[in-house]
Length: 133
Ligand code: FES
Image 1 (cartoon, rainbow, N blue to C red):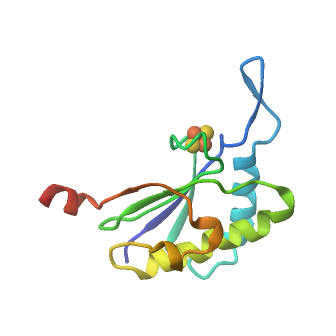
Image 2: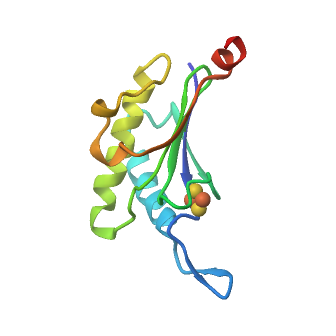
């Protein structure tokens, strides 16, 4: 079975003082919520949850991405890390990841994605498609 990865930026929505990050970032809060839901998720064995330090979507925090061999890679942004809506945001990420998992090419139409997942920062074609284009 193809292994899928859910990347989560842990630097997004950070607070900076004198050039140093202080406290817990919004990305770290989102990751913690995702980890909690991921542990109970039916696709937890198929989707690796992987923290990353940046995906160049810094002006649209928080950012997550889906990637898998042979599929388009999607980077999503504007997932606010507001404490009150974090569980709902994390659920939307995992619901969207389920759609991604079901698609052989990973293509996700705007209208079928949960509302919090409608800001796509980039969509990169699979390596095989890029080579033949
Ligand atoms: S800090 Fe999160 S994408 Fe750059």
